[in-house]
Structure formats: C-alpha cells, structure tokens
Image 1: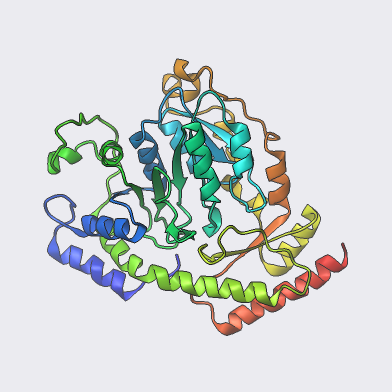
Image 2: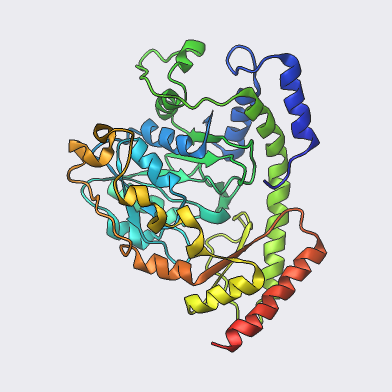
Length: 389
C-alpha cells in the first residue's frame, strides 16, 4: 500500500452513515468510480470486481474465450494470469519474456499455433509491454489482446493508458498495488457486447438491477461483485494516483542518473516516461553477481519472487485445476489439441534473465535523504560486485 489516510476514512464514514452498503439502487460509489476510472483510461466501460483475477477472467469471457482456445501468457507474471485463462476454460501457453522483463513480441509470434486465440501482455512491476508490435501481430493473425494491467494502474504506453489498448483489460486493487481497497479489481473495454458478457461473470443478476439489452441473453456465473466500501475507498485512491506516479518516476530517474557511471546496466524499458517508476531494475552477467548485489542493496532477484515465475505455478504445471476432475480444463475434450505440456525448463531463457536481474522499489513518500542513501548503497554494491567480475 502506498498512501492511505483521512480521505479514505471520511469516504468510508459516509457509507456507514448513509446505511447504503449495496451498490444497486442504494449506493453510488462503485458506479461513480467506474465512470471516473473509464474516463481516466479513455474507455467507455469499466466494472469493479472482487479481484484482479476475476477481472481478467471477466475480460476473457467477455471476449468469448473458452474451451478449445489457447492464450499466450508470459513466463514472468503472477500466477493469476494463468488462473484466469483456466477459469475461462481455455489453456495458457507460456511464452518467453525478453530483456524488458515483459512478454517479447518475437516470442509471441513464434508461439502462435492453430489453437491460439488471444495474447495476454502483462505489464509487470509497473513496466509496460511493447504494445504496438503486439497489437500488429494480433491484427495480422486475427487474435484478441487482453491486457493484464494488475500491476500497472496509471502506466502509459506512447501516451495511452495500459489496459485500454487491447480489446479488454484487467486491473487489480489489492493491498500491494498503486491504488488499493484491500482487494478488488476492474475489467475494462470499449465494447458494449464484451462488458455485457463480462458483467455476467462479475454479477449474474446485474440485469435485475440494470436495464438488460434487448438482444443479449445473460448467463449464470458465481459472481464477484464489489461493495460500496471498495468504491468509496477507490474514489479517494484515484485522486492520489497521478501524484504518486510522478514522485516514483522522478525518484527512478534520479537513481538511474546517479548510477550511470558505476557499471550498472538498467534493463531496457519501452517507455521510461510512461512506466510507473515503481521498480528500478538492473541486469548482471551472472546469477552470482545478482545474488550478491541483492544482498548488499536489500534488493530482490526477479527469479526469486515466488508465484511471479512460472516454475512456481506447481498446481498448473501438474494440471491440478478445479474442484472436480470433470471441471478441469486440461481434461476438456475441446482442449485435446491445445498445447498443455509444461516443463520447468520450457522457458530457460526467461529463467536465465530473471536470475540475473535485481530490482529495488521506489516509494512516493521517500525523502531526499532516503533516496540519497539508496543511491549510495547501489554505488557501493556496484563497486564490490562488478570489481570481482
């Protein structure tokens, strides 16, 4: 969590005092946030959900992704990206990242198969994927693009907010994200038909409270509706977002400028001005160097981030999905021709890159002194690690 304070407390208090905790017919905080979030991103439709995972699932289902379809996802993303694909009944195909630490356009093109239906670019760690070539590939191959922007609220790519560039997108608002309501997420799209289907995933009874399109037949799903408390908190959080991003971007630029002369190699970034600036990342020649640098700087080796690396998605690698074998997409007849075989070595290039990459986090409330201290730690560590190369 980055910032949380009096504004959020006041908004929560207003909900309590009103006694209107249900979004339909009673409250309006969720709907107000959805309007503002859509306008902020430049999309016509946004719906709050209970999590980023459900937001991605709703986006996929909204686009008609299901059994018989493959969705390309990166080797470095939180496991929820793969979970959402499986929740839609489709099969995730794991694709290498490149030196930007995001899914690589070349690897995407090489991975497309007869059953590939969609690409899920994941804007990891506040970075942005190279969306123009990804969209070009999708258009040439007739594929859908579902952006996983769970870790990238407010991030821009060439002047456009990520999550708004593909056919649909999903965001997370859990405790660790740029803006948060503890848990929560949002599915966004420009397409009315897509949001109608997505809304059935979020709340299969939503048309009981809202006008139902004459030509749309709703379907039943388990639901993941947001509460007015979440909407109220997010309204205050959204007011904070741009200032926080400005501060983190400024801190990252300052750190990179102050460490250019000590031999450290920042990762290649697609849009330095548009990314969140929440992570400063360096790549080394060997895992040993990366480990030592992380130790000296209190940083994190990207390969050691648990469920953010595909080798740690053990239930998925083992095809253990769903509460019953007949509910497991890996067993669906429609998925018989999809690529379902996973090994820990399948994206060795990604594992190598992640094992040699170290990141440190910025914060919008870091003081000048704290930033100076971090810079000195980085420079000192570089002297130790690179001198022994």
